Length: 236
Image (cartoon, rainbow, N blue to C red; front, side, top):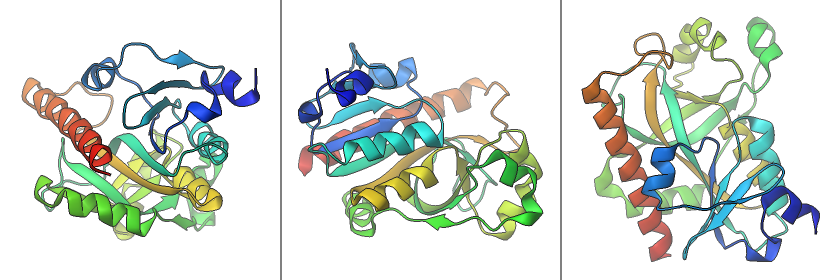
């Protein structure tokens, strides 16, 4: 058994041209993708659909970044990071259930750097411009918004950095995107991210249960996201 197969649960030659990375695999997402059985490796769980490979990476920049590096030596060419994000502030039609694509992402991946926030200036990483624009053009009527993201390493410290986020015009935060963009740029793989907004810092924080109406809205956003991803790869 090769290193790749031991880690991902499938052979590297079985990876498709298009891949979707999932840091968090919720039952709802698995159900809407109509996925039943993942091949489980030591680090990742993988399954193929007719049009793409779906990889559950686990949460965190290291897991996602490493997955991208390993995919360099497979048939994979196009990558989409798919998951949830937190909204810095509700504005311009952005709220719970909004669909967003980061056009750039600040790297606040280090807990220590976040804690000593006055001492650091985070680097910025970007998606593949052509790949992102292709996705947005194919979904012009779907209200998918371009945003500025910051990848963070602490859910506790995100609240303390709220003012800093707003000063930098950061719209959303996540926990993997900058590593994903960085690794994709390093490997030469085309990459973009599609997120659904699941919470709003301080206003509707991640640890509070959403009201039924917002739960329904969030569920609809997840379903819409998956439909867009499937249609996009089907048409390529």
